[in-house]
Amino acid sequence: MIHLYCATANPDKLREFRMAAAGPSPTPLLAIDPLPGLADLAPCVEDGVSFEQNAILKARYYGKHAPGLLFAEDSGLEADALGGAPGIYSARFAGPQATGEANNRLLLEKLQNAPVRSARYVCVVALVDSGQLLHTFRGTVEGEIAREPRGSNGFGYDPLFYYPPFGCTFGETAPERKWQVSHRGKAFRAMLDWLLAAPTHERSYGTKIS
Image 1 (cartoon, rainbow, N blue to C red):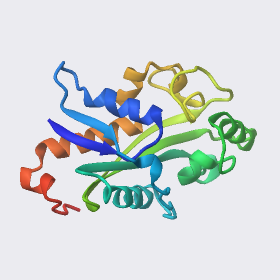
Image 2: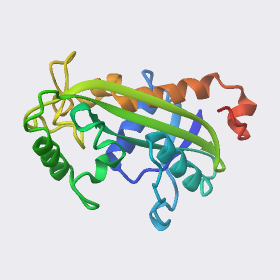
Image 3: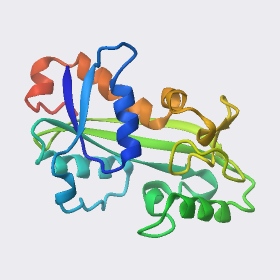
Image 4: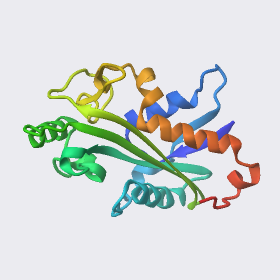
């Protein structure tokens, strides 16, 4: 079993990662725990200009406090009509202490007269060992912005993110089904595949792969 620490204080994200970690069989492929003492650490300054940069910043910062492998992620929504906004500012689109509802309202306001409503979710996961970067993994999922919130599942922009193959928003989608196609699920599975395929010395002693 592989033991990973996760640098997130978001219980929704942690729940999704743990759900995936259990794998399809009763025997878990890996165990995921939040970083011990995460709440006592000063927040990482996320001053990168991309999802990749912010994910790496967080992973390196929190990884120095982890007793083993740690991963951090940065994710958000890109609306084409807004030039890719809110992007890396997705969680604080409506302000530093914005709620998901406030962010959704602002997004709808800005897209009120937009003829194009295509958008995508993006997630980048960065994996480190003792603060040293091992690899990054990127996942995306394409969709559209609905004209009103639908569904109470998920979090963030899920009630507005309409996924055509499902014929509904992520807010109307069961978590297990969403995980199969979501940006976060794709990035996480890519990390898991890499961990299971990487030689033991590479994933245990911090050899930098990329």
